[in-house]
Image (cartoon, rainbow, N blue to C red; front, side, top):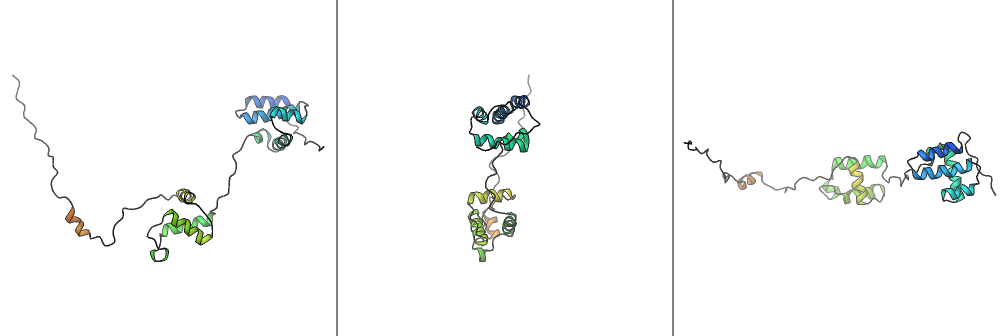
Length: 182
């Protein structure tokens, strides 16, 4: 049997119960009440029953409480997976997006997400999904915009010949003169 980790000396059972009562977090209140049981002289197994957990979890609560106080017992957001594209990768991606593709080199005339994913793989050997690439490009301040397509051999003079020049079919009516009332 191992020696239990002692609790901080600057708290007591009544203070922890008061903190649990005033807490807005249900999980923090449950943890504070379990630790209050230990402060009141109860066994760690009793604290585990109060908290509805095992002895190892109570030990983890004691370590967190000793390190951070009552705020250490609040649930925190999980850190998640670190981003695949580091700052250097994002700078290179921003340069590529700003410069635009070179048709002779890249074989395309405008960037699509799938093209950027392929470029990231060829350049850095990092596998990124199109969804992730869209999110990254969006976070960098770029929007998915494309101009209206225009044929390279389009004749601007020919466009004028096809524009409508007829007057609009409606006209404003004249103001009618009303007969005077008698």
